[in-house]
Image 1 (cartoon, rainbow, N blue to C red):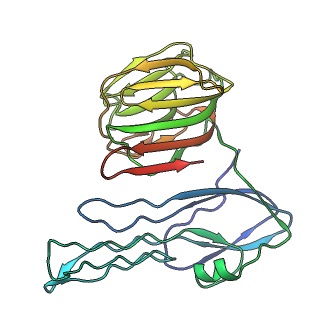
Image 2 (cartoon, helix red, strand yellow; image 1 turned 90 degrees about the horizontal axis):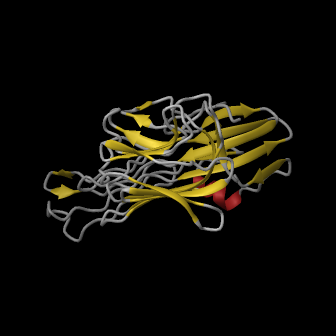
Length: 294
């Protein structure tokens, strides 16, 4: 199981740290862009495994948020991109017109560097990976029931979810959630329990209530699909195993958690033992946003 070794927040500069020989899961979350008319794009998240045969000095760089448009002294000014490579926003053709809002600045990248370059452009242009480092793709992320992930994305009423996973049979907890978010115990919003009420049955919570299913599939890879008020899961050949139909979906108010549920900003301790191979949320509307872990 992965344990947290280092955690970094935005400072506007590099932070040096040491790594001993071993195997590390590196998670980098990019900063969000500036806000226009209440909308913004969240930064992407990348995952990778770093294998070290010897000790190493590394540098963490956390991206800064992009600037939002401001109207001052009769005109808009250009929005700057966030620290560490965020792109600058474009200007409107009439910067003095308050109704013609320019583009916001883009969010900066977050990266882990193995040398002390000053800019991300230098890193991309000139850096060669040392021979003593091995990189491999993350096939899945696993929780033993003590970890969870906040993906920092809040679902909408028409958000669709695809999650390729393997739920491990576990009778140690009465409630286990593979993913979910709710405002309160009586407002489910969107929650998928793989074990509910001390029984090996699934439960899909949405629209302020919950619907229990039957015959949850454990210890094999499945694909869980949420489409409106229907949650279904399929085997490796794409054949439907079972489904649950709940109430009409509603907009969420807190970000989605994986391996647990977000209970109004806090982990619920309904943590599941599972492997997640990929997780994709897609909102089909004018402000379309896709959050993908793969």
